[in-house]
Amino acid sequence: MKKQNGNRYIRREPRNDYMKFYRVIRRYTMLKYELSNADLEMLLYLYTAGLFTYYEYLTYANNFSWDKLRFKRLKEGGWIHMFRDKRGNEHRLYELTRHGRHVITNFYKMLNAEMEISTVLKNNPAVARRNFSEKTLMLGIEEFNKYVRSRNPRTVREY
Image (cartoon, rainbow, N blue to C red; front, side, top):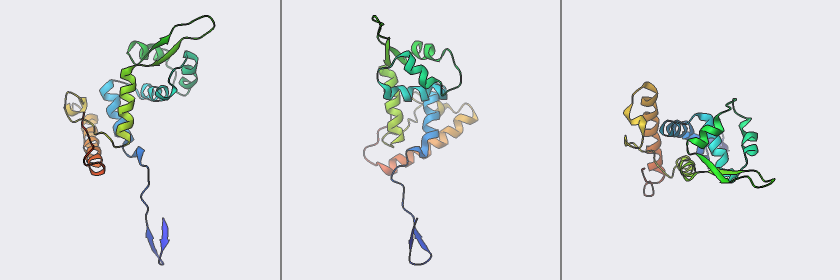
């Protein structure tokens, strides 16, 4: 806040408010793609890593609760795949699949308020509102979509 003329204050709006709807976007992504919070955070980390070895994966995996099968589950689930098999002394290299990169790219677009969250049942399982959690998530999604429309009235696309 900046002091101006005695007791009056003028509030400056923050330049970046990426995290304003983080919880809504995270819950939507986890529900739609059937990911756990730790799996989603791992995919966010691996997205920026590009090519990585299993040992680099393990280094970051130490930040999460112990899940011995996470790597196997992500690999079999189509989130990561082997880029190069082991050659001599070199390690196997892995990367996110096209689907994994697409999901994380959309996650960032939503955080940047460049993309709305779908309100169509085919694209968003929360629209069914089967339980209280999904009902409250839909309220958050509706608020988020209003926010996105107010920031970008022309460039918003719904998926």
